[in-house]
Image (cartoon, rainbow, N blue to C red; front, side, top):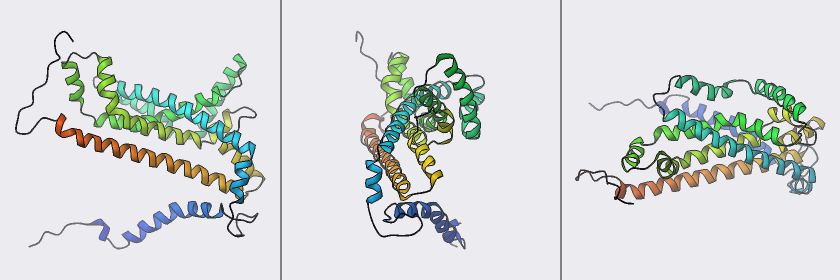
Length: 294
């Protein structure tokens, strides 16, 4: 008697629900992209195909300044958040005997659960005190605020990558008389690179399109691209906003595509190196010894 296997994809209505979910997710985005090519002044009435709004957005000096400011803030904040998240992940994941490890893990990820408006108000109060004490009005507040809420987003892929790594490679490096710094630089860091890149790109995208925290922390004349678009929409939605949103979408897709290519090439490189680095199944593997005097 043939064994009957349970296949959830054959359940009645499964395909319909799956298609409905994809339509719900991507139909608004497809509508936005389509109306970014609208030649008319209205966002709801199609006036023919045109690239005019892209040209107007590209020639708008305010849009250029806001876009450059967004990129600078996102680059600095994601770099700072990635460094902090990497150190935190190594300290938490590799230290199995640390007391209160679960509490530390929960504390790092808590900003993901807390409503963003709460974080924004807290950062506003803190940076207002610092601004009053120091008189500094630069972009440092926005970079520090974005880095603060980007740390959990960078921490998730880095810690997941670290937990999936083979810890025996680090133990082998220690057996070969490598110092902890040498083992981290030559073993842990190269293996952790895909997770670090993923965390940095996720933090960059999250910082690039943040509105709530930026709106609370920024000073006068420090509009980023999302806050500029929000201000324009208060005066009335124009196809120029659709064109800017589509360009932001293209940047996000380009980043995700770059990460996919890097991750695939890294996995292919590991597969090519695996037969040379792993011990043969027919021959017992012995840990090589570090040459004396080297």
